[in-house]
Every structure is written in C-alpha cells, then in structure tokens.
View 1 (tube, one colour):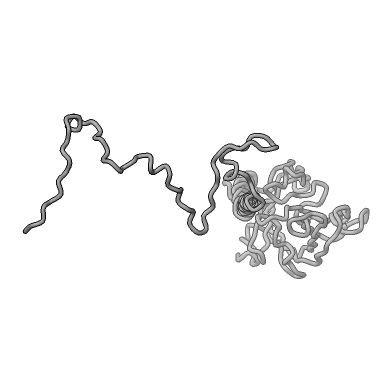
View 2 (cartoon, rainbow, N blue to C red):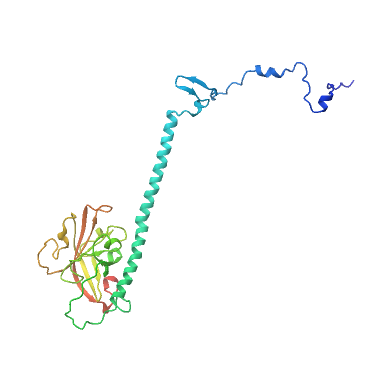
Length: 296
C-alpha cells in the first residue's frame, strides 16, 4: 500500500487572518537563550564589549580595540616618516629641475633681449656686425658704458657658449648675464678687461674646463678681439687684486691687453673664486667678417 502523507494541523481562523499561529508543543522559543555562544576560531581574539569600572575611571566598551600599542605607534611613525621623505625628495627633484632647465631657460630669454638691445645700440640696421660710420673726431674719447646696459659679446668656442656682457657686477646686474667690472679696461684696451659671472649651468658653469691656449673671443661695436688663456687659478674672495690692471700687482702700470673671468668655486658654493686670465692674441675688424675661431 502507498505511504500515507503526513497531515498538517488544521489552521484556525486567526492563522487565516495573518496572526502568528500557536507554536506546536515541545518548541519552546526561549530554549535558544540557554544555548552557549559559538567558540572563537583559531587565531581569533574575543573582545568583551561591555563597560567596566577601573581604577583609572570608566573604560569604554571599545577601549580594547582603539587603545594604541607600541607596534601601532611604530607603524604610524614609519608611515609619517616615509611620507615626509617622499615629499622632501619631490621638492629636491623640482629644485634640481629648475636649476638645470628652468633657470637656463630664463637666462636664455634675457640674453636674447640683451642681444637685441646691443644690436640696436651698435647700428641703425640692428645688425651688430655692421660697423658704425667713422667719427668726425677720431681722437674723441668714447662715452663710458651705462650701468646695467649691454656693452659686448663674449664667446668661448671650446664650451660652445656665448653671452652678452652688461656693465656692472652687482647681484642685479649679473643675474642673467656676465658683468663688466666698471673700473677695469674695456675690450681690446691696455689693461685688464675683467668680467664676473655666476657659476650656474646657464653662465660660467664649465669655466674650469679651460686650459692654457684656449680661445676666448670678445665682440665690440667695430672689432673682434681674440684672447688666449694664459693662466687659471683658485683664490679667496678677498683677493681682489686679480682684476687689477696688472693682475696680482695693484698700482703697477699695465702694458698688456688682458682679459680676466671670475666666478664662484666650487660648484654649488662660493667660498672660493675661480680665475681665468687671458692675453690678447690679435684683433680683427668686423667689416672683415667673423674670426676663424668662431667659424668665420
């Protein structure tokens, strides 16, 4: 015979209206309260989330979870130190980028402006290679240079560098260009044409690479002056006699036509001065074109 299916208890009228039916006998709802809480699994830690009264005062129910430990303090310190070092490294990289590319671009832009000013001052055509007409009185003394204005061009073929030289050696004067010591001789004159420049990548950064016999060319309004390096040395900042008319011999009357370049030493510091001395080898009128040393 087929098995008889189980019979469900009849529903009363309250069950049909949505009321909670009466639980069958033997199913006590409160019986679950007597069951034990599940035991923690291996590796888990049970924290009692009940307030406690201690000798130090009221203890929060979450104090076991939020109380800092030696390990957490150490991790926080390492994380903060790492963030500070990363920030410092980024600042250093930005500064180095500015020193290498940013400052050079700024100096180059100002050098272009100075070159245009010099071209306008040297000739009505704006071409610095065009000689000006002869003066009515050849013996007339040229007017002194104006402070802060461009006065000459400076070329170092070995370094593949050239600059416009301005009058003056204050920090404002030589910020974007080498500066001429106002009391020193002018290009090509008997004496010591002395020029100072910053030791940055846009100016006299590689001046220490010059050796005896290397060429330095100076451009004036009508002439090219070709100098050759005769000496390089390191001196103290107080040894100003290096820019005297006779270098190293203040008060002595000059007989040679000298050129002196000065800059800070070593790189990234200024407690010394790097000095390059050169003597005039020859001059050439600009009407004959550029000198051979510059590829003319």
